[in-house]
Image (cartoon, rainbow, N blue to C red; front, side, top):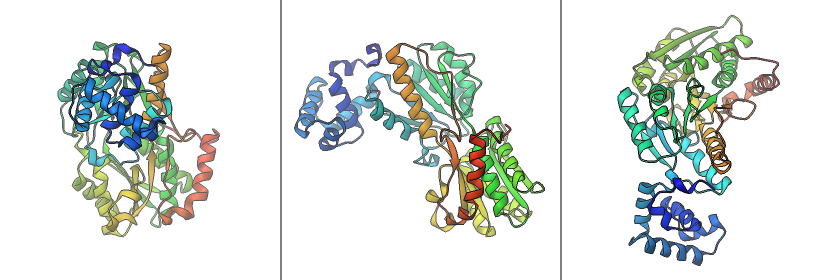
Length: 387
């Protein structure tokens, strides 16, 4: 059980079971669905809802959702995302990692709220957001994307009781006991799609587009080039980063992505891999225009791309942010119960399924046997992918 000191004032009036029911109601579940989740009868679920309404002086179920989202039972994790919500693929969304963790641990944390920001937001705005969350009692606070690193570095020490987790940055956890770095072996997954690109290329030229020139995005590039060259040592790899820090708009500018990719196709590339967030949709459009292939990132973008460009999405480098958040929340629950420290670093790689590649497009199937063999060699330690 998590420390009672974390429970929001309003929700302390409720029993543990009522808190659980309140969170599920806030998620939009019916009484029948709540009953199934908690292995109770529907009538018992209805009774708990009546008790919640009475104790919190509410008139309707919709007010429960409002109250829980304001009160955040147990402080609740709050996800501050560095991309607009529409650019977070559902399967990869960190939000999706939260509810399974609650279900698996049978612990109540809170309804998850997703805060969106934009790539052009200032450092001071991100810093203010983190301070506001910590002061409001959110615990833990999970942020996705390296653009939050500087703000978190400045804020974490001011709130030692708040646990933070950050994706895509491993520099903070060494100096801050309350920060956990969720580190992905992007270079390993990129190695595999680099091999696929080389296998699929007929011109001997492929491309890489990074959204912003960051160390985390360079890892994609390095792995991609290494994987391509293990298949064809003389292959030519064109590279471009759409913007330089502190300009993070390269993660959300499809027009810029389309122009950069079109230029690569004109220069002979027939496969282009993007690690550019929302700019990737422009890369897919350019691939369609050139009659060539693109490679997606984070989620299986063959499944989510518009129908008119889908067949041009050869594969995607999978990055299981949902799994990372799920495992982190489970560790948070365990650490809170045992009064122990959270891990400073949690790594997600090919060996534990944290990264990989997609096989939804039939066009990739001829290359699966070779790519899976490379994956086995990486997992076995026979191939070490540089970073």
